[in-house]
Length: 238
Ligand SMILES: *[C@@H]1O[C@H](CO)[C@@H](O)[C@H](O)[C@H]1NC(C)=O
Ligand SMILES: *[C@@H]1O[C@H](CO)[C@@H](O)[C@H](O)[C@H]1NC(C)=O
Image (tube, rainbow, N blue to C red; front, side, top):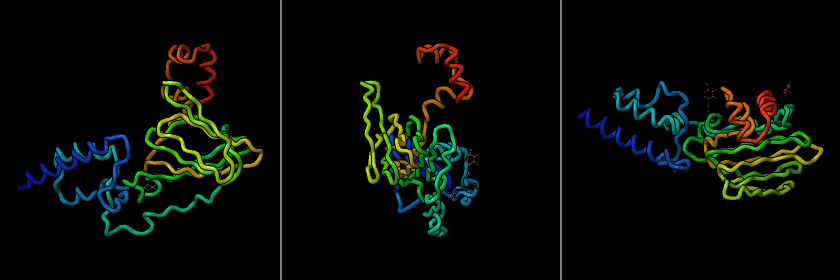
């Protein structure tokens, strides 16, 4: 009997794990699944039925999401985050700061397929070219004037760009390289919604020239058709 329960539960979890492996955040199967934020006391552990199969399957589940907190213990605070009124520190080389409220900062976002960011820009500050591998981004300007854009994939590498003023909205499709620059001499502020609880970010320059360990100079020299000394310089900057 115990064996049967374990086996069918493992099958269900496997099915869940595979459905989580599709392109988008999955639709929730319940009202909410607040991030337990503590895998050592997961519901499964209390039932004392963890076996080898469970450990294997749990690993697969962990890769794609978080454990649910017991709904009876969930409080309003689990759906709450405070602090997006705070101005980001833009004293850096790019002159921008992103405060992303994802599932790591707001446990109630788990399984809901959404997150939010405040982006601050110093005068002429730049949020440099980057992609979100798991999320489309919808940006609204609250303050200042931004020049924004994204580039399509290699079929034509087409650039779509636009100047945005207060109240203007622009969408950056999932996975595409995009940027935002403040083109005014006063600070700018934008809010972005992202279609994942954990959209991820790959900043192109940092990933290519600042990887750890570094990508070989030969690879980068050929890829960018530039001199080895230029590659070394760029690697030192990132
Ligand atoms: C902003 O960041 C800079 C560079 O890291 C740091 O020197 C400065 O103290 C920070 N300012 C505030 C107000 O935190
Ligand atoms: C989860 O726990 C970590 C470490 O204790 C903490 O820094 C983080 O804020 C917590 N996240 C949430 C959403 O409560």
